Amino acid sequence: MRVVLKFRDFPNYFLQVLLNILIGLFFLTLTRIVFWIYHATTFHQAGLNEFFVGIYMDAVALGIYMIPYYVFALTPIDQRKLRWHKKMSQFLFLFILIVMMALNLMDVEYFNYTSKRSTSDLFITLTTGEDFKQLIGAFILDFWWLILTFITFVLLLMRSFFRLQTKKIGHTYFVPLWKRILIFVLGVAGLFVMGRGGFGYRPADMMTAAQWTNVENTGLVLNTPLTIIKTIGKEPLTLKDFFEEAELNKIYRVTQTPNLGHALTPQPNIVIIILESFGNEWLGTKTGGPFTPFLDSLITQSLYFENAFANGKKSIEALPAIVAGIPSWMDHPYISSHYGTNTIQALPKLLGQIGYSSAFFHGATNGSMKFDEFAALAGFEQYFGRREYNNEAHCDATWGVLDEYFNPWTAEQISHSLSPPFLATLFTLSSHHPYFVPEEHRKNLPSGDHPIAQSIAYADWSLRLFFQEAMQRDWFKNTIFVLTGDHTPAGAEAKYNNRLGMFRLPILIFDPQKRIQPKVESRIFSHVDIMPTILDLLGFSEPHYGFGNSYFSHLEKRFALSYLSGTYHFFKGDYMLNFRDDRVENFYNYQQDTMLYQDSLVYYREKSEEYARLLKAIIQRYNFDLIHNNMLP
Image (cartoon, rainbow, N blue to C red; front, top):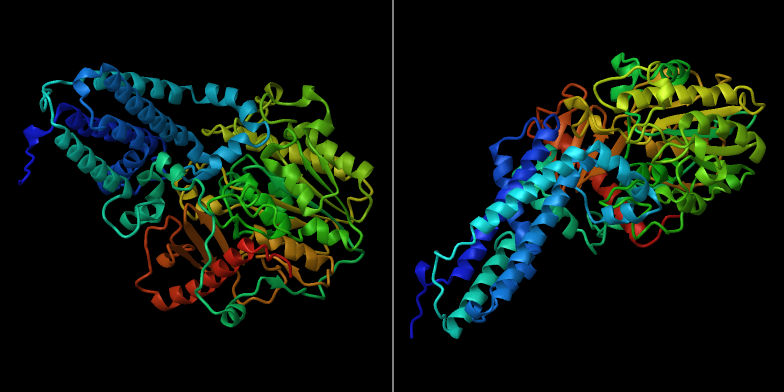
């Protein structure tokens, strides 16, 4: 017997599932519009194509998240007699869609700090230490409009959803069991295909978005529910086989040999100061702005790298890059990844071999971002945080001890707790969201349109307090100070929100004795280059492991590498190469085209392949070594 199903043959409950999917697409598109409006400067090149592709990616997410709903709703039972079944189906749909909307709206603000859609590592971040509990109040106060938007969308959803639960489409009379089973099989199969993104060999995921838009717009095209579920339980890294081992070692070696002849005498102390959210946008040296007068003055007395890059977009990614030469070239921060407990030889451990004492200072609540755990793993002998400072009157309402108190206290504590030669690392705090500035300083410090502006000015003033205290100490004169931002903050201008500007920040080396001559260095330098440079300055004579290169290494052209949302951003010479899904996506002359408007890939095929060859070698070595815990020289 030939079976033919016409549209009118489908029962009401099946057509209602299809209608509900359209409702879901509509409300997810609304959250994308909010996301786009809020980040208009970032996605200034986006057009209708991005929204159509976004709807496709939303359909994929709905196909995955709504599995409990459509399996339950299409169950081949006689639904006319089961009112509870209809109520439960409605509850499942609404609950799942509301969660998806909440995740999308959450990223409207969180995208400012990560420049990517959140992945499953978000839950690790939220459950690490006390950060989330401390910040939830500030988030509610600062982003009340997002909560109000969410409530408005939920109310609109509830109203429209129940008005569209009509009984007039299809039919409600008895449906034979065989037809119910057929509808169940075809319906579930069709929605399963939607969740795969079609009949392609590989299910749609974050990489799929990059095939339909440029790298700059992937954050707009994707949705947060999809990026989270696609990264749950996924190994952060996979092995690559671009080259045989012998060829790989010729192209790129991760074991660094010392560059002798640059050691300072007497052997100096080292102080690394990592400045929270200090990007080039707020640096007076770069923009002429009034927010960093002290750091600007220090730059004129330092070896200053004007072409410096962060290797990541988060504080938790910066620390291992700076003190261990280990970047987070993957979707999870190295510290919280599967590889975070690998055996490493970080700077404090290496310097301990030549008699250095060491301490790490961070004014946040102990346990914040797992800094205390990583500091111990890296070999820091002492850790000083909010608990050790032990004065809650000097704390803000969220993160911890204010910079104006913790910075000079750090300089004092170095004198009491460390014996020269020593390594001390200070990670500042107050220029982090919610950008709190004490009331008594708000009239005296410059402010700007973005709320971070005044907190940068406050952090700069507090940095001055550190040096004022340090200059009174016996150890100051024979100390090398390395200063850098940890990552860039949310940009107020479009050029600081693209995949070039979002990684550019200050790095400088200050020597009070001027043994390191002050100059503006135009060669590329990044976070992972800090450790090998320090080792050369101290005359460390043993090979060491790390993905950076010393300032004193004899490289024809230096490079920097950053990673975000599945894309590698490789900077070498005047060019920036975007590499995704094992192929070159874009090639820009970023020195001339800072807005990244002109993709020069078709004009520089040979040069881009040369760059890609080196990049592939770096990726292959990085993935292999982290997966196999092979991170020693």
